[in-house]
Each structure stands twice: as structure tokens, then as C-alpha cells.
Length: 392
Image 1 (tube, one colour):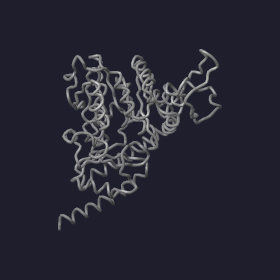
Image 2 (tube, rainbow, N blue to C red):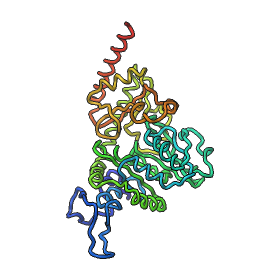
Image 3 (cartoon, rainbow, N blue to C red):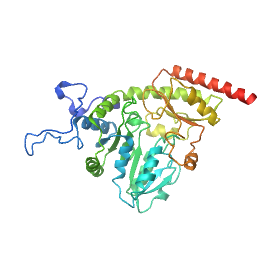
């Protein structure tokens, strides 16, 4: 019987029954750059930590197991992972990418990848006819689902039928749901990306990125590239992510439960004009999520009646933090216009639905009543202030 994901977060089946590393339950940090050998041709299996390190290797095996892939590469950040992946393409290659992506991904594609000769077409992959944009130069389709921050949901399995028909890659950034709630490789994707900084790490204390695949040829290319470019994750950071993954399941369940209650609460608030959360039955991607995922996650986006209202929330929250990033145990609110998507041209932001009234929330694992109590207090204060100004 296949191991459940909660168990896979803690144990590598291949290592069971053996006592390694002096029986250490917490996998050791091999804080070394290089390794001694007994003689020529007598390697320990490790030569230099830019190539591989035991702590990093253990982490990669865990992440590959969680995503049901054959190989995973741990990198110094999520952006380092995307940057490395772009190196498998050559000048003239064309990629179809979702129009609503994390701003850092858009910045990379527009300012680095295009400079290096790659061509991009940005479309709404969740609703447009992706196949009609495929050309003889198209090598991949790149999506997030749900997207950041507008929570658009693409049917991975249906899209994979198109990419397989044309012999091109399907790349899925799975950061928002983590492997606990969604496994794109099982649905037909060829490559999965993660910002390990987020849910996999889960504590806002380190940076990491991952590329996972079930294709041997892609793995071979990426292993050569990571050795060559040197963006592999350091031993201590690898250990921090390993530690975070141990509690991935209980964190994801608690944060999701909180997110559902907060989304329901926001829907009832006078100052809120829209709540975008796939767990709501009103979300257009709700049924697709039920089909391809095991949960809806803890990310939600909401719009306020005015920019003034949105900024006032950011000024008044205290326990909830106004900060970039997501996926940690603490609840964070982000202002995409000046933070995650600041480098995306205004016309593209607005086309995607990111306005100056838009806030994105990463719901943490605090007691949900405390979170709602703070939001309620802040909303009432702002409502009174705005009402007072209008009357005067």
C-alpha cells in the first residue's frame, strides 16, 4: 500500500530498517564544502557541495517523494529554481505562460529570459484556447494554479492532453497548494516548481526553491546545469526545510480551516466588494479544484471598496502582519500593487484584476477567532472613520 503523504513528510521508505548517521532522528547538517577520498577512484559518493551534499540530497529525496517525481533539485530560492529551469531552453524557443503569475516570474521572463532569446506569449490559461497559441517553436506551457494573486484555476489534466499532443512540456508552479494538497505530475505535468520558502519551509526563516520532474532527460539536463551554475541550496537551509516539511500536513490543514472561516467572514463585510478563494462555491474554479486537488489551500485575495480602505487595513493591523511572502505559520497581508507585483506594468496588473484596492492574505495557524476579532476591530474602526469623513 502506498504511503500517505503525512508519513512521507517524515520518512523515506528506502532508508527504513537501517541505522544511519549514528541513529540520529533529526537528519544531520553536513556543514562541509568538500570531502576527502581514500584514493583515486575511491569516492565516498560526495566530492564537493556545489555538486551534492548529504543533507541536501536527503531533502531532495523527500520532496521528490512528496510530488511523486523521480528527481528533485533544491535551490537557493524559488526564483533560482525558475532561472535554472529556463536554461533548458535555447534562443528562439517559445513558451506560453499564464498572464497572472507571481511578479518575480514575470520580471525574470521580461528582463532576463527575453534578453537570452526566449519568446513568451502571456494568456489566461484557465479560460483561453491554449492550443491556438502553439507554434512550431513552442516548447512549454508554464502555469500557476491557483494563480498569484487572483486565484485563477487551470485544469491541469485537460491542459496536459494538449501539451502531450504537441510534444511540449507542461510546467506547473505548485507553491500555493504544496504537494500536500496537489500533485501536478500525477495529472500530466512534466515539471513542478516550488518556492520552498513558503509552505514547505513554513516558518519564514529561510529561502529555498525546488524543481521536481519525472522525466529522466530533464533531470539529467538540470543536474548538469545546477552543477555548472552553482545555485544549489546550502546544508543548513536544507535542514531548515527538512524540519519544516515534518509539520507540513498539520500546518496545511489548520491554515486551510482558518482560511475558509475568514473567507466566509469577509464575504459578509460591507467594505469588501469581492472575495476570491477557491474554497467558496462561488469561485469559478471550485469544481476543478475538487477534482484535481485534495484541498483549497490558505491563500485568499479580497478587494475593498476603495484604495483608502485597503491602505487603512495595512496601517491598523497588529497581530496580522503587513508583509511580503506567504505560507508561514503567521498570517500575513500583502499589497500586490507595491510588493509582489510592483515590477509588473500597471496596465497588465489591472488587466489581471490587481487594483489598488486589492489585498492578498496568507492565512496562518493562529486561533481563527483571534484573527477574525482583529479583522473585525480594524474594519469597524475604518468604517467609522470613512463614514465620518463622508458626513463632514
